[in-house]
Length: 176
Length: 443
Image 1 (tube, rainbow over the protein chains, first blue to last red):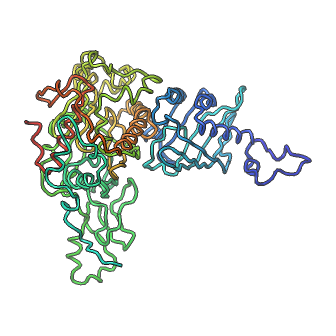
Image 2 (image 1 turned 45 degrees about the vertical axis):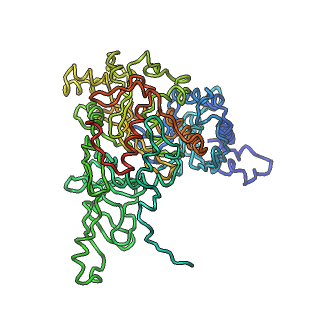
Image 3 (image 1 turned 120 degrees about the vertical axis):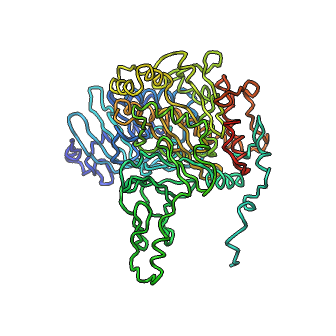
């Protein structure tokens, strides 16, 4: 794990209000997560898809301890299904996102929860406001597994633990 | 503050509808738009359809072991479905008989007894009152209280194919009479299991929809909308499993009577004589254990036919939809809001099938599903459109002149005919008018 503070020598220590530095999370990883969030917010579907590694899992379970092999999830996409999901959104007739929901999310409370080999898992909290027929508030915890590759950072897995995963939840056809 | 009469007027008056009023909302080829929006209609549905008629509540496989329980609601009323140590599955009001606290608060669990946190009253999972703290306070009356204040069972409960239904009215037609021809759909589903048992153990997706509950249900047997509502799936992911063009397919729609209806692919699938068209055209070599078990149970030809015709696509009035290898049920919340619950159908002992079913279910169904998310959106817009009071009618005449009647019901060989909707509304009006249902399938 890169210690970002140690790279700052003679300069004053980074402001403690910088959450990424305060938590010791590589700013490059945080920037990647912010970028991923913004592409999702702005319905830039193909650019969002390009963040994913060849081996991928996009998972929104119904409970934090759910077994995805026996319990139904709201989303459990492998790489092929991520491609299909984006292709469907790109048709322009995915009615549940035509027009796209207006979205803005904040992501915070970054913590590295796992670092093995070339992959780092960053946990964070998010709050997402969706405006469609009305304002809908979404919130939860993200787990981004980010892989360092020769081509740069790639998203290997994104898990979304919704605070209201137990449901019922409204239509969630946008990229959570 | 003014003291008002809390008892209120009788329900008939409160609903504000008189005999014949509902009948006037439904004609053979059209219904009034307000059937989806009117609070008085909604109140009457809550009382007649969910408060008296047979409704799907749970599947026995959700509570496989003694002590297992799940909590459910029947149009807002909380119920617990529990398997007692005697193995019996009971549907009981989820309400402490003392002061009314909701007793079980988890979606599911396992417990031999339920203890109310308010005053500590404890009920065995067969419903009997087993413990009352400081019982001396009830004096001589205690024995009577203990005997009389067990959990209140649903007035009637019956099971078919493991599907547990309840009626909150003490008297009425039997479940068999209610199901009528629709029992064949349950038979067709469970026939896919070598043991005849299915397993609904994956949990229920819970999708809040901003439309009337009937729209959720009748859309499921609408063979007309797919090419349009679901165009994005066909454009981006895969073509339809069979053609939507009537002249190119033998897929039919059927009003089975008693409000039940279906889109029936069996004739088309038999014409193709191809297994698993309904399951992504899976090669049988991928599931050898399942094939072997099914052939042992049904014989080689029987297994082949079972795998050709596959599961049903059938709506069982009022709240059960067998969507091939998914089960959907709906709970009304208000005229314009409902919750759709969906779970995949597992075949016990065949994880190689169930894993595929699970992934297919997640792909198609629920709030993020490739199909149902768009149905939810269209439903919400439909509700918004119906806020316009004119035109007064919603048109359901498609295929009216080409419907034919046979032993299975009223069928139309054009899948896009609105035959299922006509059957739904005819029965709906009869139930709301308080007419005795149960004989339509035989007529």
